[in-house]
Amino acid sequence: MVPAAAPARAQWEGRQARVVAWRLGYLTLALAPLALCLIDLDPGRGFWVNLSVAAGFVALSLLGLQFLLAARWPRATTPFGADVLLQFHRQVTVLIVVLALGHPTVLFVWDSRFLGLLDVVSAPMRAKLAVLSVVALLVLVATSIWRTTLRLSYPAWQTLHAGLALVVAGAALAHVIMIGYYVDQRWEQVLWIAYTAAFVWVGVYVRVVKPIGRYRRRFRVVAVTAEGGGSHGLELEPVTPAAARAFAPGQFAWIMVGRSPFALTYHPFSYASSAEHPERVRFVIRGIGPFTAGIGDVRAGADVYVDGPWGHFSPDRVDASAWVLIAGGVGITPMLSILLTRRDRGDHRPVWLFQAARDEESLVAQDLLAELAADPGVTVVPILSRPAATWTGERGRVDPDHLRRYLPADLGEVHAFVCGPPGMTDAACAAAQAAGIAPRAVHSERFSMV
Image (cartoon, rainbow, N blue to C red; front, side):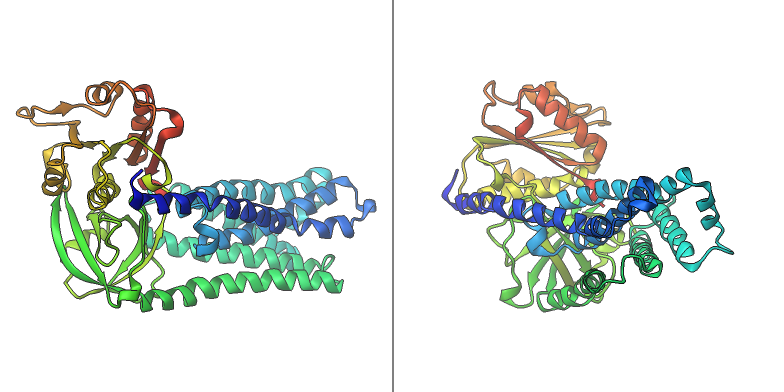
């Protein structure tokens, strides 16, 4: 490992203790409301009623913690990586749905008289709030899973997602308070007040504190360049030197161009510049949506608000003898950061870049890659799935044979980094392992993170 990368590796390794601490803290907060069930347990109500109550309490506490996961609080997010926590956020949502549906279902099976609570006309308000919370939760999950099918733009979906989450949490909390069984003791009141205050604080942090910080650390556009494949490079510099933030090659940030830092929607993009120069950062963005389609029209001098860096997709985390980089489409962007950082650090470890695209017109950043490939330690291999008849390079989709033709026989300490659309990424990871790279040494990042 080159000396410049050693401190970064030590920093990654030093986070393990914090990971353990945050996991224990999460479990404690998630299970804390169960104390209400255990302390105020009423055997006369029967096992099934108490089980239903326990499921409801855990669902509510997990729901509250979802707001913390989505807030991207640096102290809690950095040890894991925002991409990892986002995946965990999705997985926990499945558990919340199971518990939220299980909470009333157990009661309905145990005593069919509880089915009357579903009558939203005559049922008491506490029951109406419970129904509202569960229905809003199901709509939230459905619109997240089928966002593309429903043709919801990312900004529209994010606004809907945030609104529904507030309805789910607010209605569920009001449901508990109106039942009243678990809020008559002083310590119980303190517990629920603390949970409510935590919800409010997360909202204030996300919508007020963080935007103010982003405004103080805002960037300005220096240049916008065409990069091929329908992509544009957005080059930025901080308004004040203190705004420059160190990042690791391969990481990403959420950005907003030209609007208020209080805007609801930010968009995630990987850094495409050298981590050795955080005072001048660059993103390469393909125009495929309402926001990205206008990147080429951004004027120099426009303000850009950056929330980052985030992510664990970085060679700085590992001690490798060489790297295999596999990129699909605009997944080339973190690879550009990795290659540029390698150059600026004077790192001479060999690297092979396999760039997958449909045709020559879809290839991104070809001029920069040609410059980087002048280094004898860098091998760039474009692979086109639908090339023109005149194409003389590699054809098809990334497979083990493509990799074996260029990689050495001994891949013991070689690590692979794969970035692209989900299907391509899964296939490329499998190809890397089939070519001889150890599964533990294959790292990936998928475009469908949001």
